[in-house]
Image (tube, rainbow, N blue to C red; front, top):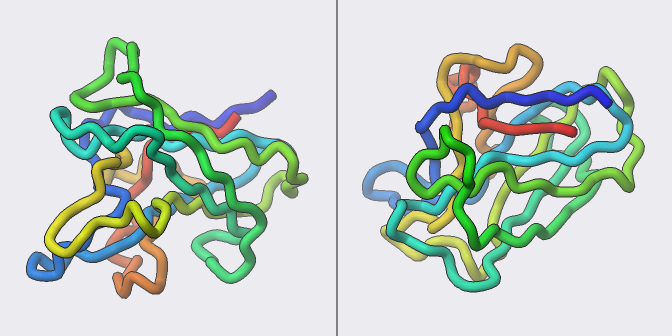
Length: 175
């Protein structure tokens, strides 16, 4: 089984959702494209608590949406609801609030090896941040183009020009 591991140990992160219009920061999801190297996959973003002292609510979940294409959000292939871990990562490189990779099981799909796909992570509607706040769950990222076969995206509905983020990647693992 071939895996893709994009994890340079970066401590940089973004909240999964942010609702701070006074700072120009409003988005409801984060996304990463990749090229499939297996037909059946598990996909995990490296996640964290929004801040070390902020603990998400009991039974918090995240939503993974898998789309066909690189940065295209018009053909949804599958949605998975995944529990957010209650424990911090025991990885010796873990930084404050790090819960490690949190996986969505997409093995029920048959992806086309060599094709591009995009995975979006978001929160249930009742867990999106209120005005002036950020989500209590974040995702680790980097700005140095550590994965050459895909990239980070904001969803087009969030109004950002994704050209400005072409060198950004989320930290993720495909198995």
